Image 1 (cartoon, rainbow, N blue to C red):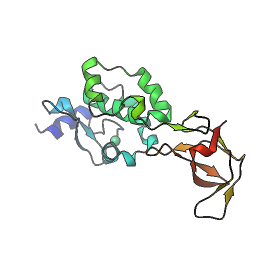
Image 2: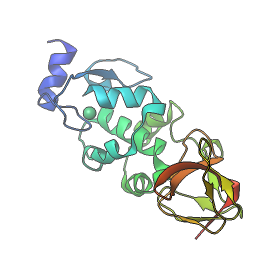
Image 3: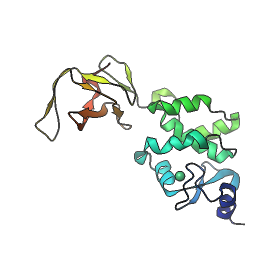
Image 4: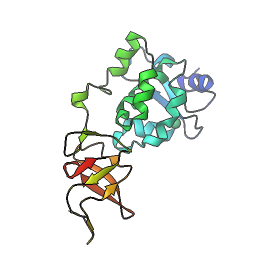
Length: 192
Ligand SMILES: [Zn+2]
């Protein structure tokens, strides 16, 4: 039986991460030792794209890990662990990681690609006082800020609710001011 057919049987022809049945293909969990069904899983196009291209990661898509992290199949758990680690700054993935159990060998495998590396390698957003910012936090502007590409000035003292983080740059967060989504530099905000 081909690998794809074998995985199709195991997964009931669904993405083993999000249960979508659209455009399924085999994902090898790197680094592989023997390959085959114990080191692969069946994933949909959306999951595969985001796994392979961190810049495409949509945190909300990965709420599906809430269920799939409990899979009985190790390759599924490894990828679930890696994606939760990638998203841990969102808050809820860290909560799931705290409940996540992997055997020691499997944990080593999960860490082998560098996902979930120690904190110093992670992008941490801090406000003007050095307080760590997380997605969903509320902040206040401590300075009048011109808004790029418009004549608007976001006034000092403006509260920005439910910020999101720029996952590639610790200096930037995003949030809505007067209904407009703007990029804000972290050193000009204070967490409230
Ligand atoms: Zn999927």
